[in-house]
Amino acid sequence: MSQDPEKMKSMIAFKKRLEDQLDKLAIEASEAQAALDMVNQMLLEKGFKRGDIKEVPASSASIPKEVVLPKHEPEPPKPAPTQQHTEPEGVIPLKTMAEEPLALMYFDKQTIHVLPDESKNFSVNTPPFTNFLVEKVFAKMQEKDKELVRLGQMSTDKMFSYNIARQGDLIREITIKNADEERVKELKSSIRWTFEKMYEKMKSGV
Image (cartoon, rainbow, N blue to C red; front, side):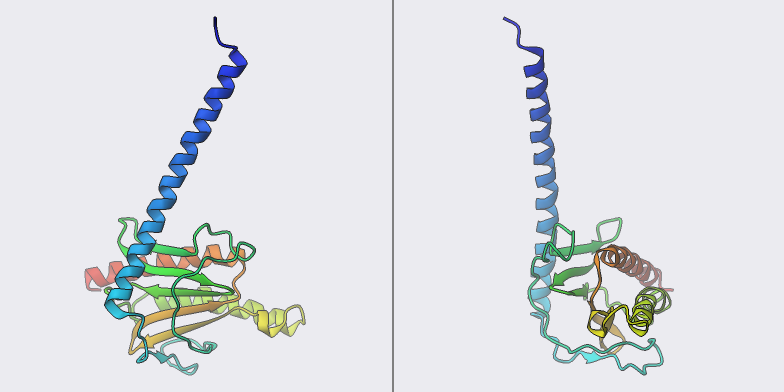
């Protein structure tokens, strides 16, 4: 007896959904493993001991004016609250197109932490860190919110702010506060692109 055509279509559609779900789970597992590997490497190398890191002064000649936030020791990555961010993972590895690790980005409540791969020794003096990421991305977002505060459309505690922790000229951590969903997407893309271009210049010796 032949199968009911409608029942066969339903079974085929269900089979396709199961296959898609398995593919999605495999991708998520791969991304989670990559993030875990990077966290383990950083813990083994430095143990997150950053007592010798100095805050960037707001009057620094090499970096535009910044809002200096209270510094705290980085904590292990935590999942981002679903109402704040749409990212499926609380930890996002930032890599080059060739899968070379650049930085680790993770969310802690209203704060984004960006921890550059310390084996790369990224410097604030390497373009396009200052002239693009700081001046054209961070500063522009901050200026926009300052105007909203001036117009009474935003409270100061909701204003976008950032802080760059350095060890000499080396970038050790970027802390960002009050980035909404749209800005999170822009920041993820801009930070990854910036560090990739910096890495290319470092490799070429420029």
